[in-house]
Length: 130
Image (cartoon, rainbow, N blue to C red):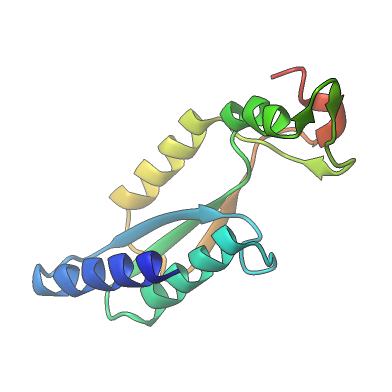
C-alpha cells in the first residue's frame, strides 16, 4: 500500500512541477468494489490522481486474455483446477494499449472509463481456450 501511495504521490508532485497537462492511468474494472489487496491499492492510487490538480483520465480494463492461462495455472493443484463459474469478458492487451494511447493523445476526461473484450465467457469453461 505504501508503495502505491508514495510512488503516485511523488509522480503527481513532479508532474505538477513539470506542468503536465494530462495524467493517464490504467486500472482494473471493479477495483472500487473488490476487497483484494491489489485492487485496494489501485483505489488508493486512483483517489490520489482524482484529488490532484492535474487533469486526468483513468482507464479500467477487464482481465487480459494473455493472463487467463496463468490464472488457470495458479488455480491448479495436481490434477485439479479450481476456477469460479463466473462470467468474465477478457480483452486483448493490444486493444487495451490502443485505447490507452487514444485517451493519452486526447483531452483529459477527468473521469474513469471502462473497457472490455467483445465476448463473455464462463471462467471455468474457458481457461483451456486461451
